[in-house]
Length: 275
Image: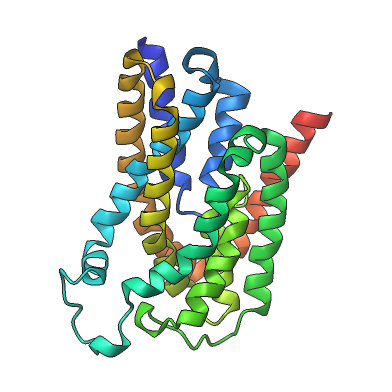
C-alpha cells in the first residue's frame, strides 16, 4: 500500500468521523468524496471499497463508547446513574425497541442497498428529502418538549424514532438526521434526541459493520489491511472531536442550519452531475 493511498484512507476517516454524528449523512459524504475524487474502488475493488466505508464506522462507534461509557454501561447493569429512580431510567429494552424497525429492514434489503443505492445520484435524493424532514422537525416540533432527558423517553417514542430511522437506510438521508428529527417531532428536546441517537448507533452500526465484513471478508486482501487500520484510527479521532462539538451545537442551532447545508450541497452536486 503506497503512502498516497494511506492518505486517502486518512481523508476518508476524517470525513466519516466529522460527519457520522452530524445530521448531514456520513455515508453520503463518503460516497461523494470517494466516487467523485478518491476512487478507492479502482485499487480495492467495489465490494472491498464499500466494506471499508462501513468498517471505519467502527472507529466512530468506539468514540461514542468513550463519550457515553457511563450511560452504555448502565444499560447492561455495570454502572449506576446517579439521581435517577431505577424504575424510570432509560433501559436496554428502550434501545432494542428503537432498533427493531431499521434492523429488520436492513437485513431484508442489505444486498439491494449495497448493489443499487451507493451512488452520488441516490445520495443527492437523500440529502434533499432528509433536509425537508429536519426543517419540519424544527417547525412543527413542540416548543417546550415534554422529554428533556434520556430517562424520560417512553417505549412509544423509542419505537416511533426507530420507524423514522428506517429512512436512513437510504444513503444520504442520515441516521442522526432521521432519528433526531423523529425524536423532536415526537416530543423530545434536540439534545435528548441526539443523545438517544448516539446510544442507538452503537449496536446498529456495530452490527452492520460486522455483517458487511463477514460477507465480504474474502474480498479484503492482506495488503489492504493497513488502509483499513488508518481509516479506522482517523475516524475514531475525528469522531471523538465532532461528537462533543455537535452535542453543544444542536442545543443552540437546532437542525435548520444543517438542513440548509444539505440543500446547498445537493444543489452543487446537481450542477456537477447534470450540467
